[in-house]
Image (cartoon, rainbow, N blue to C red):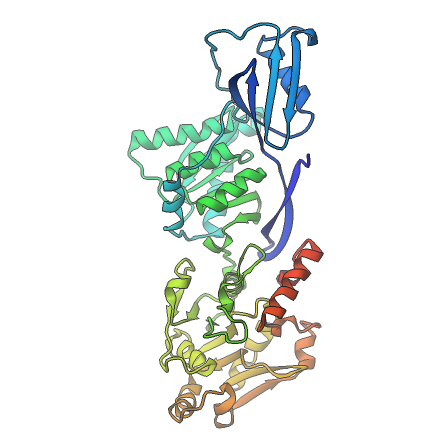
Length: 469
């Protein structure tokens, strides 16, 4: 049985994000029946299970040699081990709760907890998470001096440490902060929890019962911990080291804070789209690499701009994305009406517009376009296919011209271009930053979509979704 399973993750490295696949350790629950009676569920790695079982019985004092084992049958597919031994088990076992990986315990979250989590989207940012992990690291003197000591901390969204615990068992640290919170009357709903140890299903189940919305670790999660966090609506982050991290689940709830590298005085505007006639469904909601199209676009735009707006007439579809949603002022009049609304609602005098089906945003291309913001009323890049008005910069000085053509019933986005001062960036300039012109690739038809998904599967790592710096 394979001990590793690949998951889509978002890796944050040096302030940049990229989508790739990473293996996680398999967490394998095995039900143990001895002499026909249920004994325990061992949570283990799924290799050489006969060694594990015989060693377990030996160290529990149930056998002294292999001759005491009459039969040992393991069904790996269903995770069941039937063992018959010479002696009867004691009538009353005296279990010891170990500091290891949860021997004898298996978790399934109640439906109520799963539903409550999904109804309550949470929002965090990497700055607060890194601050909380730093606080934990600063407090773990015993871990550094002696080794073998695990630690955990609870903090708020700003990264302020509220509770801290240390123990030889990583699971015990969760119990300790839960108990202290109860004694102190602290509500842990939607707080962040960080730990020094590997994250297993036991730990996820405990965090979910506390209402925690984000779990972070210096090391890795197991495969089943990833699956449980996905179900529970919990953002799971591993390998938090320095400013780098791997996001395993619900990356849309974690804003990548790169304030020092953002474009100032420009608002990022995402056009959520309208009827999508050629696609036959809402393009912004199509799944890709573990999230929706619009989640990928928002995450990249949030890295680049201090303010991001989504123009949509159906804001409830995007309620978990932590930014303003504004409707068309000229209702359902196409992309021009969307650009007009974004420009009218933006706090900045300039906006950079991108469509929701253009997820391959290059920071270098966007910055090149925005660098020309003071040269005209709008800055439009060109590609091999011509001008790209849905990946362009607009100034509020364009509003009167836009309203003039919209009032005349015109919907084409270029209908007002001859009424304002336009700056054109040639394709050669764009290709210096994006040689393959991926920035302008969009998904219009089911064929486009399935071709993209097929490429991701073929490449194992989703190269097309890799952020271009």
